[in-house]
Image (cartoon, rainbow over all chains, first blue to last red):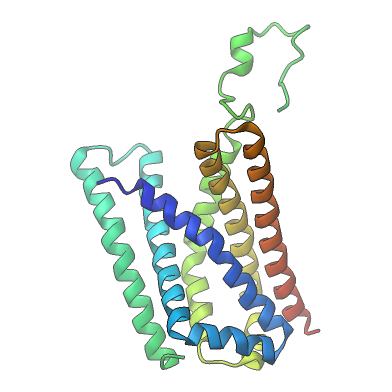
Length: 111
Length: 134
């Protein structure tokens, strides 16, 4: 498994995605019109795809980062342990993303 | 870029002066801060997700009330601060790995700093504005 590049790629995606988060916060501070624009975007198919992708990038990057913490502390260097950590981050990231979106739809009724 | 000792008077060997400083000549502070902010964001992740969930389906007036409350503003400010620092360091590592033209690298590192600070300040300003109720 060579997932270090995915860690890096999700990091870069999250980096540029912060523009969306800043836009959302500024819109909330600006007024109903600006906030409506954000909601129109996040409510659209394309917008939802972006936010879904962002959720996954965040979850994967976090779990993959925890994997790096384990290595920083000097554990998990055996071949099978490395594999387990990497698969854990991959499967865990997807699972958490789906879980978050299920909860979001249950609470917000799809916004 | 500071040198720990003045070379003239120091009894330390040249090797000991540069040891542990690495290619960036500034030691492991970025490495440490990358981990520090990473742990901070991992701890803040659940509260941040809860805040986002709370905002689902609410209009601007509702969002304003939620985002303006003290604990939520504090959680988001901490998360913004940690993420801006974390992503600034991360992007710099990527730039240093792939951009080998020295001048282009300087420009890229500068732009990275500008971007990270701009995003952090814009978000911080928005939250403070919501909190002050202006």
